[in-house]
Image (cartoon, rainbow, N blue to C red; front, side, top):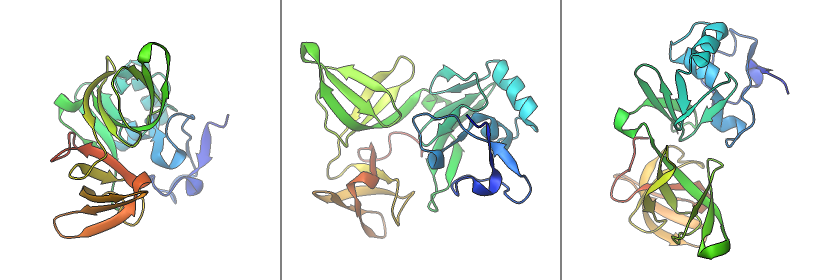
Length: 224
């Protein structure tokens, strides 16, 4: 597995200085696609916690970095959209997308450090009337509760507990993850098969169901 990639070939969603450097760390494969994630070592340097990869590695080795409540052990570990990142002693971040589709990591309240929204991508019925839900961050959750594909779950990490079920339905708040209106927070106004009409304070937007992520009811459940 290659540990680096050329900076000019890195995804456009990465906020890096392409003409100054030749090589940059490559994230290891994980739940995110390459254009929706960056290596944690790069993020540590972007947030001015380290000047060099060696310094970033030292911080990792001190067990000072967590992603979604788990200690990170590798500077190539990927982090991306919707992940919650903690860098000791006092930095708490979440991955989001701006209106150009660029991956951004914003500061969030420490009260949200263990909260994450995941979209339900699939579900399977298993023994004892339980359902296994396949979530957008690669995890599976078992429960007896009935949810629909396309809904979202607000999860607490750890202990991977479902805090709230956010239905894909009219009136709920969504974050648009693709299309012309990427990065927009809006309210679902109508749903027809795979097409969704949303509204903001100023506009009415038509988009595809696959680009809608439910993030709350009357308002976002977390900061994005």
